[in-house]
Image (cartoon, rainbow, N blue to C red; front, side):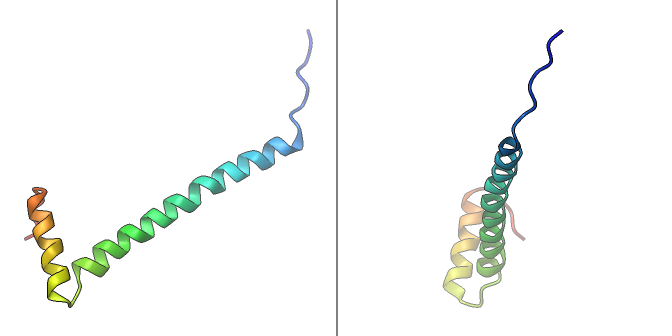
Length: 64
């Protein structure tokens, strides 16, 4: 029976970089989504809030 060679140490670094490469875009998307929901949904500027409100209704999402 032959044993497979051990994986090089750089493979572990590549796996860690891949994880970081996925975490950063996910975190950025969450922050953008939170900004859109909070920043636009609760905006004191009537035009911005009404535009978001009308868009929600046009997409079929009830909001009140």
